[in-house]
Length: 104
Image (tube, rainbow, N blue to C red):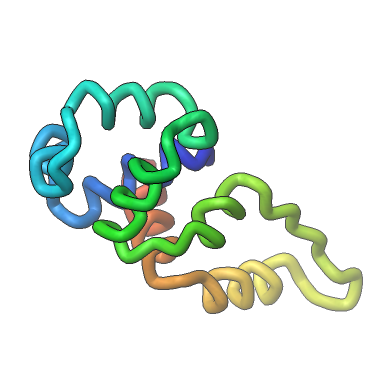
């Protein structure tokens, strides 16, 4: 999942439409769309921080989205390893995972 998709999912999980969220954080809707349909990495830091603050998402957590590389230890079963990974997720990431899985 890309950082942009993660943020969109998180916004929707908080009950906002993208337009309503843009109004809530006092950002032009077109600016929010450009960020989420382009690249958060190329956006102005002030805008990224505004989005993150409103979502209670740290910049560190945002930076790691989509860059996690899962290595399953040989001694652990995949199910046990997956359960551990899910348990260790932040609340925001657990919410995003629930939303993602509910689509299937």
